[in-house]
Amino acid sequence: MSAGPDAAGGQPGQAPGAPTSPGAPAAPRTPARGLLVAGAAEVATLAGGLRRGAAQADVALAPAGTAVACHDGRIVAVGPEGEAGDALAAALVAAGADPRAFDRLDATGATVTPGLVDPHTHLLFAGSREDEVGARARGATYLEILAAGGGILATVRATRAAPDDVLLAHGRRWLARMLRHGTTTVEAKSGYGLDATTELRLLAVAGRLAAEGPVDVVPTFLGAHAVPAEVRDAHRGDPAAAVEAYVEAVIDEQLPAVAGQGIARSCDVFCESGVFSAGQARRILRAARVLGLDVRLHADELAPSGGAELAAELGALSADHLGAPSPAGIAALAASAAAGRPVVAVLLPTVPWFLGLDAREPARELIAAGVPVALGTDFNPGTSPVASLPLVMAAAVVRLGLDPAEALAATTVNAAAALGLRDRGALEPGLRADLVLWDVPTHAQIPYWAGADLVRSAVIRGRVVAGA
Ligand code: NIG
Ligand code: FE
Image (cartoon, rainbow, N blue to C red; front, side):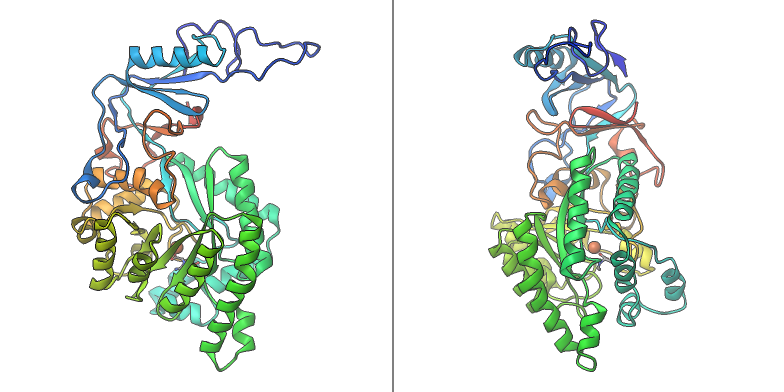
């Protein structure tokens, strides 16, 4: 990063003339410096809101020479460098700052996009489960491992035993890795506590990570991720009663505590044959909504389970996975979109890949049906120990037939919509100044160099937080 046209000798981040001596009288808050991102080979703005159908492939490319001006955490202008610079100077003056107090971030040769939004992760857990990869290679299935007390339940044991500082350090480490791959907002589910105390603890850790930044963290309550061992044991011989008892605990104990503390934006349920039925998911999500939470669900990840249908019925923000939705489920999502109440289909294509399954999410069918599509990592220790959204984009392009432009819309504007966030996911004046400079000349190469680390710089709220 080079200094602006005239940095006036100030320290980075400090306005010219700001007091420096310890004895100086308290000054008004130091006005934030501006940032002008200029010289890019390509700027994909994704402006214009949620994408679906043919529009899913529209990344709203800006004309050559477009710059992005940022001030006080927001984008103030997207346009020719001279005009964007003038708008930035005006914003600085309006804030009482020197109009030249901005940095120029040189994007020569780079592609500039909005910061990526990962709308589905299980960020917070302890331990790892590489042993299950071998077990699956020897023929065990994911749900068999869970039914035998492994899988999610193995991670629950490790997570309950982990102190907060261990979970915090884990969260920081993986958020930093996600940022290096271009992710600036991360949804983080609880779900490895399965009791009120640990679920609340996980959400509190997510909240602390959000407060720390720079990556924004959006917490989701997923108490209904599996039935914990102690509830199974209490109803030994009657698994159906165990599930019912746990559903009641989620509704009567966990949800009110979570909503009471205001530490989750939305509620999720693992709606899957053999885990929680659509009827049980409906009860939990309705209760969540009454308490003011948005709703989303793990829908038809492994088998058609009525999840897509339920997401449409409830007007959920998103229906996630959709590895095996029924035709009726896809039709229900299409009808919701056509009626102006789109449920975002959040596809997680590294899951069947990592599980060694042939299943492929019906991305083309969903797009043809007018359903908005987003992509996420599903970062978790069981089905997707994958932190890189560009790798997920590659999987979507190679395995699901998405166009690179569709994949970019799926990890920016549509992913933000899946989280109910309208303040990010595109480069438009007024939105958060979260953006990425990629070391490639066009967005079409982001999913092409699969697995490469292409991020030159990442900017969050107008501050360069990765790269230079
Ligand atoms: O999204 N399916 C449920 N939850 C995760 C996996 C969790 C785990 O195996 O630890 C998923 O695939
Ligand atoms: Fe998941």
